[in-house]
Length: 558
Ligand code: GLN
Image 1 (cartoon, rainbow, N blue to C red):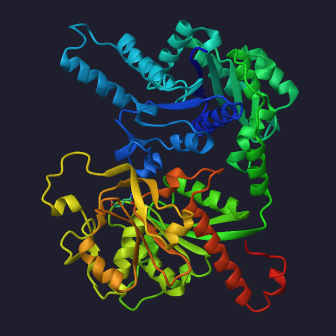
Image 2: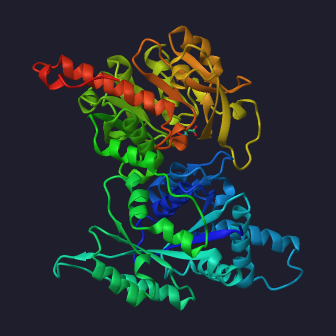
Image 3: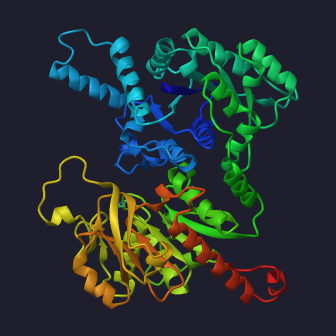
């Protein structure tokens, strides 16, 4: 079979869920036994999102090979088994960087370097490279909205791909909005018509329309869109808002999307097996109870900053058949006014579990330390991720080991007790450019620990990293002597990867980001166990409240 491509573009407005749509198409094609790969093009000039603020850009997703990528790659990994690497996310900035490098090397032999053909060729080569990685179908998402100046070279590149490879090897899927106008009490198709026309003006006729709306499209509505947009009626696919993103592939399948893609691309594939997804969604919609988790972080106003984290917690909750209630707490709001001020405790009361996620910089650290102290002392399940692991170590050094000024050299370079520091800095290594520990690293687990039990007895695991600072082993004897346990390290024992507290229901911090590897059908062990412990805490707490016995009569703990 020759390489097949599905190009996904978006129109009318941004944030319609193009990434989810692309991921769901991948999921559906995989469920029919096809091998898929997914790729995203981002039209901005940053070389990668690594240096962009979480407030601007949302989470930076990290692949095994250490690429800092757009958060849509997280959706791709959660919905499919596509092998993602730095080749799967390209920005305009990176493409120009490559071209300018070649130009300086003299690779263009004195020619004038231009958007067409040089930029478009670079884009097409990148697409072909990803599809050559053993995929039957490659799904390519073009970031931005049709009509943006920035996305033009990408649209031109996919137009050329159709020209070169033909209709049976390329299809254009366009995601649009069909808004409900309350004054008219009607869904309106005009924005969709305009968006399709805009695409057409640059030479792309959409084959399939995914119509986002908050209610179902009637037959007449679909006929109207089909007629005005020049597509088959069955190619007008309703993309109605659903309570769980994991229902999206099921809805698309009901609308016949995968069957149509296969028909257009002339692919013979087996029937879709979506039984595990159906089961998952069913569990998601019929929880036996709920569990509440407080996330104490610094980018909490903007939920996209912690996208994978929220999803991983959801996976943990679905695994226990629970509804997840996440409460975002701004860490700065938990800071004490003086050494004896414990007024923050009231804000932390009543949650089943507390989590401190990753982050950079000093802001909010003291509030996080208070939250961790609360969780440790009150035996509330605690999960610290990256920064949340580092702050757990600082809290332990300060409040258990008595090193009042313990800190990370990131927050206080002059601290007398840098419990967290840059190892390379200490070794006198000159830091040049990319100084982060990024991507997959192997971790050896200590038998008999909480971490080892969570990973079901595995002694060697691999997890993804994105950080600069590390646990300082000079403080190991002091901290472990006081009770902290180191349950995971890199194989050469240079880096501490997991710490935990034995005399606590669940207190674990990891230097890596487990959220990047959690999938709805394969919940991450640490999230699964954290949610389980949090729920146990909930049941215990409610049982101890007066008059609670009858309310719990039907609750069983798994
Ligand atoms: N700021 C910390 C570091 O760079 C933690 C990073 C993170 O949480 N991702 O080490």
